[in-house]
Length: 328
Image 1 (cartoon, rainbow, N blue to C red):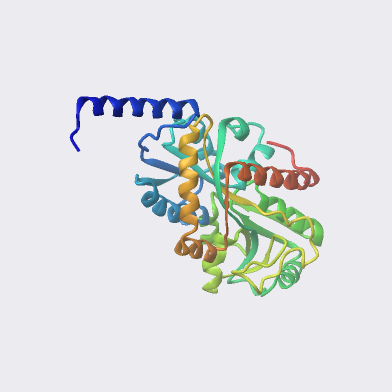
Image 2 (cartoon, rainbow, N blue to C red):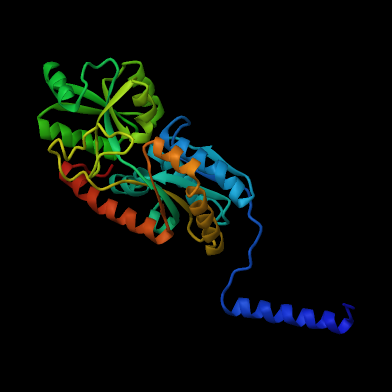
């Protein structure tokens, strides 16, 4: 075909018409993505860090840009959340977090330095999980009931490690202490990795954290998970009872993992990222790896993640209130 000036003008006219239609429909014109930094509020070596690195590696291939994990540990994820708040709302900075930083900290801290509903935008969720109670290898207990009996033999006193202060693990320790009339105290750490180091060194007899934090050492026989939260036993831990089975109700609501962006981040970016995450979570390798960590892979849209957070907040608000804890 001979290309003439008339053909060229017609092509330009058709392009202009198409562009006008797209704009009238509110369709976003895709912009090249920038390299993405995913903030993690806990040290390397813990479950949250591991999940972030698994996803970042696959998202890099799916999005075609560098996706890096940056650890900003401290204050139960508070430092990373504050960094997200002041980050540019251009898709270059995201925050991968579980329930503690997004849901619990704002309820137990007078001034956390951020307000999730105003400062953050839920992008997508990728999993639910359960917290677990584990004993160190140096503890003779092989079950939760044996741990209770052993603690009573020690005068009813004991310290239980938790990854962060004023967290769901801390409130679980109080629920256990009240239920079984024990003098238990929480020993807060700066994340699950240093807590696990002390458990492996038999510096502390027990700990409460997420299943992903414990699962590898549990499989290796270095610690023993003896109870889990949630409404049913975990696929990765079929022999471990739930607290409901042990007579402790009200601990069935599941925490979540999600990815958040600064408020004001363009919807075109969050939609693109969310779609890429959905594809990554369909990969058998990714699903298997996350499942082996003790996570239940569950893709959630922005609105579904917001709903999950709301339900979890309502469940734990009552537990926190019943504990008598006052925001600090």
